[in-house]
Every structure is written in C-alpha cells, then in structure tokens.
Image 1: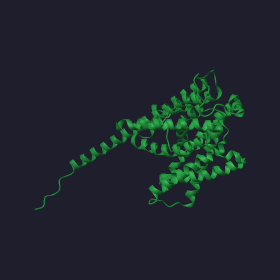
Image 2 (image 1 turned 30 degrees about the vertical axis):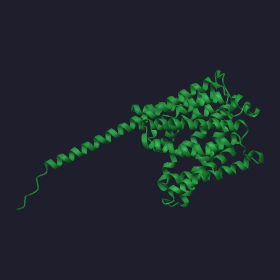
Image 3 (image 1 turned 90 degrees about the horizontal axis):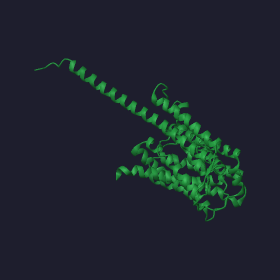
Image 4 (image 1 turned 180 degrees about the vertical axis):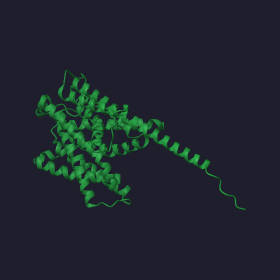
Length: 360
C-alpha cells in the first residue's frame, strides 16, 4: 500500500491543478477582474501560510539581510505576481485546456533557462543531450501548433455548465478572435517563462535564506502587496472588488488555500519519496483531466489544434525528462565506478607497503 501512495499523491496534485484552471476560467467567465483575482488569491494564501510558518519555523528563523530581501522582492514580482497576472489575461483570451497544455512545457522552459544561466549542461554528442534538444524543439512545435492551428472543434454533447451557463459577450468575442487567441498563447508562454525563471532563481535565494516555508510565506506576502497596487491602479470600480457566495469566492479560496497549501506539502513529499523527475512526468494528467472537465462543466469546444499541440508538448516533456534521467544515471554510474577504483587503489597500496617493524 505504501508503494502506491506516491502515485495517488501525484494524481491528486494534478487533479488539484486541473481544478485550478477550471475554477479560474469559470470566475473570469462571470466577469471577475483577473488582477483583483490574483490579489485575493495571494492574500488568502498568505493568511493560510502565516500561522503555519510561525508554528513550525519560529525557532529556526534565519537572518534576512536587505540585499536578500530585495532579491526575494524581485523574485516575487516576476515569478509570482507578473506570472499570475499575465496568466490570468491569457486564460481570459484562451481556454482552461490551453492553460493545462502549456504547463507541460514548463519543465522544458526551466531546463532552457538553466542552460542559459549555466546551471545545466548539454552534451550534444550523447543520446541524452540529443534527447534534450529534440524535446525543446518538439515543445516549440507544440506551442506553435496550439497558437496558429485550430482545426475542427470537438464538443461533448453532455455538458452541465456547473460554474455558470452564460459567458460574457466580451469573453465570447475574445475566444472567437484568431488574433486574440494567438495573443493569449504568447502570453501563456510568457507566464510560464516567468514561472520557470522563478524556479531556477530560487536555487540562488535558498543559499542565503534556506527556510523553505518562511521563504514561501514571505513571497506570498510580498506578492499580495504587489498585486494589490497593480489591481488598484488598473481597476477602480468598487463593485469589482466585492466577493459574494458565488464562483468568485470559490475560485479565490480554492487557488489560495488548496493549491498553495495542499499541493506545496504534497509536492515536497513526492519529491522526497520519488524525486523531481517522477513529479514532472505526472504533469500530463492535469491536461487530460482538464480537457474532459472543461468540455463537460464549462461547455468549452476543444479544437483539434489544442489536442495535437498538447500531444507534442507532452512528447517534448518526456524527451527532455528521459535525457535528464539518463544523464543522472550515467553520472551515478561514473561516480560509483570512480569510488570503487579509488578503493581498489588504496587496497593495492596497502598490500604493497612493507609491514610495520616488530618491537620487542
């Protein structure tokens, strides 16, 4: 039973992420401002995480210098605030299925940024290096397919519009416009690029501020402040800031508490048990779940281009992950062989050395 827990955990994680795409899209469909939504989401996450951080890490608070604080501030601005704001605009222009599909290119974008920052290396003359390059190219082809080719639409006959039957006229015109769809795809890739940069640069921040939970809480707090000023500058209508007992409140609570709180713990646990590659390989589950749920509950028509592009993105993801996994196995084998050779050399030296003199 214990062996099945990581598989259950990754399925739950991807289901939660699929739910995030769906409820966010549903909230935007009923007219919620995406900038206000990001502020409420980050505020809810901060309120949820602060008491947990105080309880578990109050005795292990590392010193926070001004320079480190500025780095965390900029990391929060680009990696969280702008990433979520751009993602919200892109989601309004496109669909929940596209949001789930482009998430599959996140590991590839992260790998590409890590190579640019010299945190990763690519050996072009090895099969693993060629697999990484092929994966990047396949993901680019998948993103281009989603953006520029729509094809025939597929729509399930049984759909219930769980989160509201009617969408705004503005939203319908956005989705129907080809130019707007391409703009949404580019914004979605930009959002994932910000997210990937956030993942890469956190490695540097963790060296000077190693408290993971406190770092996450501080970033959520700073992101709440940043997103508030962005929202108040772009939306002055007081009615847009009101939350009732509707899908808007559900979306804020779900994304702020469940996505940030539950998945943070589950992802940490899965990485500890099975490693990051195992977690990354489960990403396509979110796309599969989102495709069916968005068609059933939101009544979204799924284009053939989105399906083909999603398949290419998943293929590119697995190509990069395969190359990375093979490299790690080769490095582990080489280090083991080197350690065995050093042990044998020491034994030979010890055997050839003269015995110590015997003193009476």
